[in-house]
Image 1 (cartoon, rainbow, N blue to C red):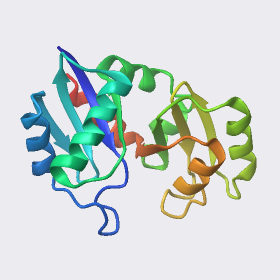
Image 2: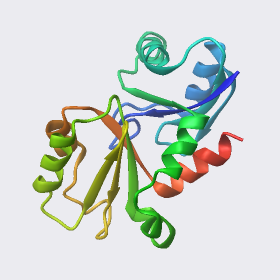
Image 3: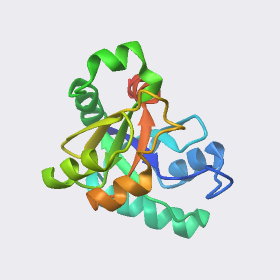
Length: 179
């Protein structure tokens, strides 16, 4: 049995793509996943699976969410071991410790090209700093995430890869849930 962390993109934001965490937990249980748990209302789940992993698991969850919940959204899934590596690879450890609510990790569908990451950093109009490692984009938003000009649409357009972001506090809470 492998423990997985799943992040859903853009649910329960601004009244769009609404899904209760109880429904998400029930959905995962109905699909046969072990010990499904959720965190917050923004689409974070931890569960066990012995049958699927990686892109196949993401695709399965996306198709089943559309079919069973009427929910069209991306699922970004990492194993518990991959989640631990995301934390260990953090290129901003000082900021993560001193100001974790202004640091985010964006799980991406695939690793972005280094030229695209450089273009993203050049396109940022504020004091934000980004680094990409494997399939994650780490960002520091010193003036706050809500006021940041580093938007999901800018990231998607510049990197050519979609994903979803969580602040460092949430990243650590999910890690704790993996056991």
